[in-house]
Image 1 (cartoon, rainbow, N blue to C red):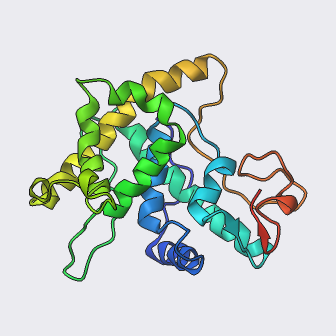
Image 2 (image 1 turned 180 degrees about the horizontal axis):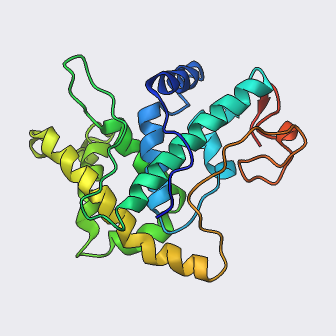
Amino acid sequence: MKDRTYKALTEREFERLEDFLDSLGDEAMTVEMMDGFFAALICGPELIMPNEWLSAVLGNSVPFTTTKEGEQILGLMIRHWNTIADELERTLYDEEALYFPVLSVDEDGTALANEWAVGFMSGVEMRHGSWHELFDDDDHAGSLVPILMLCHEHDPDPKARTDPKGLENREDVITMMIAGLSHIYRYFEPHRRARANAGVPQTARLKVEKIGRNEPCPCGSGRKYKHCCGADASSLH
């Protein structure tokens, strides 16, 4: 297990990221959705680079006002990604280790977890074909059930909505969701290892550093930063 070489986000940094995402409107994810989204991408059998997922988080366009703002926001996202990756990796070596998701609470202080589950399933959809094995595995597919229950609680299609009785004890469902997340990560570890052994890059951690305007963008697009995430007030990719 590698030592952590980065800092988890502080409460103030989460607020900065949340304020930025809120400023982008309804098309962008909330921090809670982003947390679930990242968790799915890290758990899954295939590595998905930021150049593919960033537009989904930010609602397809990124109106960074300055290069400094772009560096700051991307840096916060990557640090949080690395926090999730680190905590999930711990579950491979410590059976009691868990990743505790970032969940917002309502006026009564109750965590609902719907947005987190929606974000997670959005991550699954990015590589739905590679998740089929788990969905079709009768012995292990149960780890997805709490996530699916929370994801579909308010589904626009009444027929797809979760039976309210199943969520009467929401705290228990969220507890099962958290435990299921560790199970999902462990389930796909052999797949990630096999791809790594085949020479396919599989490191879940992303680099966080100051980015030169002419250096490759850390999102993995292959383009120069100034023409990619560092492009002021421009569309992403």
